Length: 122
Image (cartoon, rainbow, N blue to C red):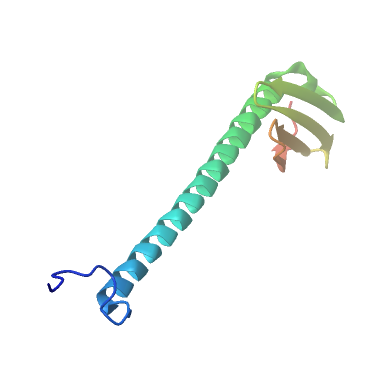
């Protein structure tokens, strides 16, 4: 009796070309999808860290500029938030400008330093 269908091989043991092509395409799709997933996770982590650092900077800047410590230089202040820590250090550059350095550190170890120059408060 003759076989109607032989899966990936013929009678001599050779693998059919259509099976090789289909297998190659499936492997390529799987590798591509895994690579895209990894990149998406890294991108999401990067955006989350950036957002948390930006929120920490905005909070520290607004709290510091509203505080009474802003009147005398050099001055340092620190602020603790649930997701990180911010330290602000300011010193005068001239009679008209003040340089403030913000050291931001998240709880996951990511950190950033931002320097801003402001006009001297009245």
